[in-house]
Image (cartoon, rainbow over all chains, first blue to last red; front, side, top):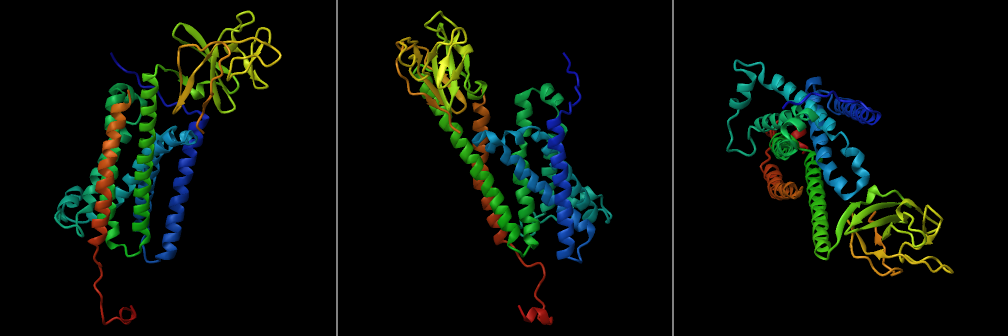
Length: 345
Length: 47
């Protein structure tokens, strides 16, 4: 068994995403070097670039770590999740430039090899204030390299998703190492409160986002477990149902039409009381489910035809938990009113 | 299917929530001025 390498297909969305990343990187570095040279006229170009690329990589890492929980809290952030790997590779490249420049500037001019010098020139591992923080950055860069090198779909398929995901969870180890790298490095010589405040705010934001999204997932899990215990079955994703239309699902032995309208979900029998037409292929028109065959109409929340008509169809109890629609497979008597499930915004 | 993954995330963030703020505070408390004060300089006397 072998896997074939497939080249990346550059669709318009990917191009836009990458252009935005490239534009952001150029803008940030330009602003950093421009403002940095104005505020610190004695700073060399190498120093400004080392700091510019370093702060940019750390900032990008915060953005990358925030995207996952933001998407779980609100689907509007999903476009950011698309091609997050490109952002990760960009972040690694920025970190690599930072590390490479630093290694050259601080360790390349002595007798020892720069990599040896990195580890032996400062061995005060028991000191907090003088800790050899560059070694923390080196190991973080190593983790980031492994993740960037295996970011292509080829590796995802080759290694299988669980193994790939485990490797890519090392991003948290890299983040912890980088917090140590910055705290024990740049913050030790920084007298301005701006950097420590930004660092603390970034850490607090990430912790709050991950805890909040974790709590939301936990609530959804509990609600799903409770619904399953009450006999509800998961039938589809809310976003798979077109607005004012239905998705036909099979629960138990019956076909059920699950309609989405006005931010609500209602489930009714898929069979029209008139001639057995497929209601799920119809639409919600003027607030009524309308059969595609002869235009017979029913109120979605009760299965009753609007007065003066008398037709009735069975209704089903429905719930929305997270993004999932759950339906109880036992039909209620034709025309039984059921409170529609509300879709959380 | 994703429950073990979410559990791993939860454990990782629990550890990071405890570890990283402690590291940050310890690092800030350990800070020392890298440039010793020089009383012979006029600007140092103005501080």
